[in-house]
Image (cartoon, rainbow, N blue to C red; front, side):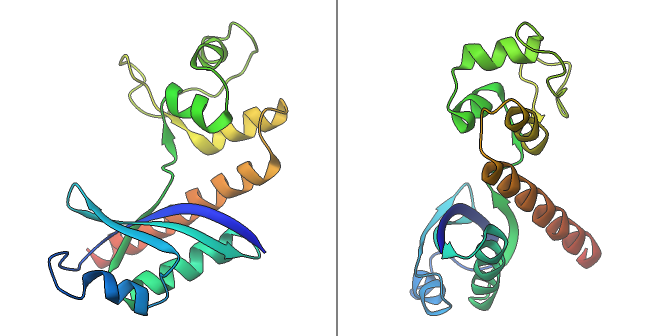
Length: 162
């Protein structure tokens, strides 16, 4: 078994209710820290499982069993250069050089806010690029892919419900 760390962003429960945190604990979220941030319920998990997909899927089931609606999984797939540097344990300067093409070619292009001073990249694309250059592990790439796929499924589910 391996320990996986991620957050579930949820909604649908009254955080002022007396049993707010107890509902999550009783539903199996005893390995999560529960908080409210910017109006969203945030459950920071350190979940032991055979693989990251099992960890995420079981946590989603537990959060839903508590009565909450799962909005998305974090760490978010949209990342800034600073986020990339932190996740890859590299300096911001190194990542900036990569992004500008000063060190290596074919760094992924931004996927959002391309024309602004603060573009955003898809973490899975960047993780695959970094892995190909031996900067992060295969497990990091797999985890990024699983979170991106699971968030897509959650968005599809929300759009069908709307």
